[in-house]
Length: 294
Image 1: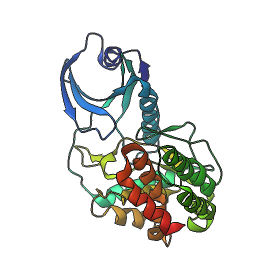
Image 2: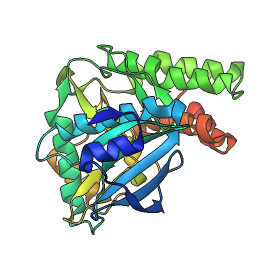
Image 3: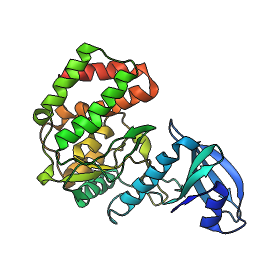
């Protein structure tokens, strides 16, 4: 993987001199980026994500996240290999392995493989070695030992400050949020065995896909080390996970009692992020969650 000076240079560094794009097929790439499958001279297919030049750090961070997940072991969910990223004129790009889609073999196996990720990659602190992005919002990852402090300052507090800057909330909702942040040690459990787990960080139903071999591929990560419950909570925010997923996860590593009571508090982070990215349609969900926990 490397930072390339242009898309042409990136392609040639991966495939060889003189190789060019013969066909470009636009595909769904989420709400943030343009995405396509490109077919190169000789027939090789690669996946291409594109955005404005100013967002090249977002692609660089995504590549780091994919490499981090890929290094977690053979029994954890695989990821597409990032190949190159860089700026091309007024745009930026991330070039990666194209995953040929297939049909998921087992939702239970998916859940168990996520357990393996959470169990095998642990840290004594919460956060990550660098900041990254959640959608197109900066995600602050400076490390802290306390999960409660990290979730308060780097997650809920940060997104709430953005929301207030964007015109949402008032002094009353400020007090509700302050109450939640003070009470996080009561509301959320301590880390498992005092250690955090490597999280995908943005694990909604659009960020996994089945490959031709029937195994899940994780895509579009926003990785950091935190409490594994945060990943599982997001799988239940928008749906989109297969039958057997939660059973497979729970059989391998049961959730602590009371998780269902905490789930919406974890997901307040993502609701706030969607509010800041996409607007007022998410304010009702944010408001209800504030009232529920304050």
